[in-house]
Amino acid sequence: MQCQTPDDLIVLVPGFLGFESIFNVHYFAELVAKQLADTLRDEHGIATEVQVSRTLPAARLDRRRERLVSSLRAYLRGRRRTPRIHLVGHSTGGLDAYALATGLHPSDAPDEPAIREHIRTVVTLGAPMCGTSIVRARAVREARGPWFALRMLASFPRDARHAVITDPLMRAIALDLARRPWHALRYLHELATDDALLDHLDPDTSDWVCPPHREGLAVAHYVTLAAGSWCPPSILEREDGHGTLYEAFIALVQDGQRDLSLARRAARWPAIASRIRSGEIIASAEGRSRLDGVSDVASDGVVDSALQIVRTEDLHGVVIADHLDVVGHYRDGGAPRAQGEPALLQSEVGFLHSGSGFGHAEHRELWSSIAGVIAGRLRPRPGRGLGETLRRSLRAGVESVMR
Image (cartoon, rainbow, N blue to C red; front, side, top):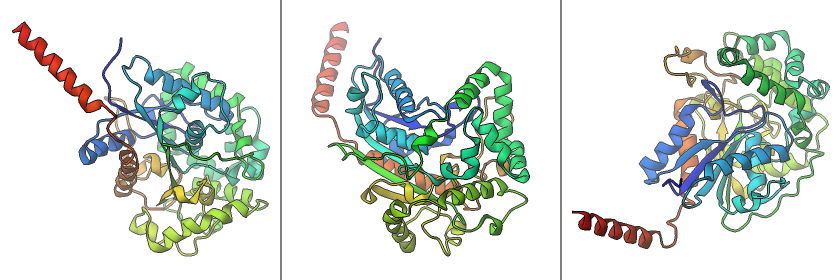
């Protein structure tokens, strides 16, 4: 049965280790989809549909692409007309979206080319477009293989392991997984048996050949950069023990940068530095105050900032935030809970606690900006006005006869 739906479909694409939701914990916090839809409706007068794509936690790029195409296929089924598609990908989800839209590393899905033609916008957020140094870190390389994530956690310093285990967000996820163990086992099986994605994310060995954008496709990169990410982890400030996990991630990124070719980072950093110098950034007052000495080794705690863009002309924004702040998991961001479940204390919610000062105001500014990018791509479909007029006339005629 066909249904009448908006002409524009926005699909949020999760990144590495990502999931749509694990019961009442969402990869993209629920306020993300609401912010997008509300801004497009209230500020641009545009009705859209927002969905979250299914993904695989750490599978190689072609398998992740197949899963993304499968999600899009499901969303398009039963529609009278194919909507314009706008992909917003966080972390490796941004790489998945870009690759699908441009034809880079195509999958075996037979309908992929047809779906690609309907993609109008790709927005990437903290995405390893040219890889990330963290995969080159010694601890990451040594943890490769079955149960990668658990082996990786075991390699962290004791206080960082404690930060993961006791973090309220992780406690919520663990509680939800315990309620339906089969769901947990499926996710853990996917995570334990395929970590091939890491092979694609090495900045020096990945075979990136970026094709030109096809006509009608808009690409916008948002670069994320966390406070103090260019400093030795030992001198980063802590707040009541928070931040220890962030320090562990920063140490991994910086370890991976040691033997990394500087060519790609050096080529893209000036465009980012120019925005920082001019103040054209999305940042809190606290975040702006912590940019002294920022350099091209900066990252968001997971992905090098200078490796988050393909073409500098597609750089649309620089956000002072850590890797998870921007999808709603920031300090005081709140955590979506199932109906009837007690909410976590907002002051406890977050994960990396980088001290970047990202909060509600910056979240609204970021996602309103992304909504603006999408709105700029929307144009009335040819003949839509005439078609709508004919439908209304026919409806009025039928109603007059029935009366």
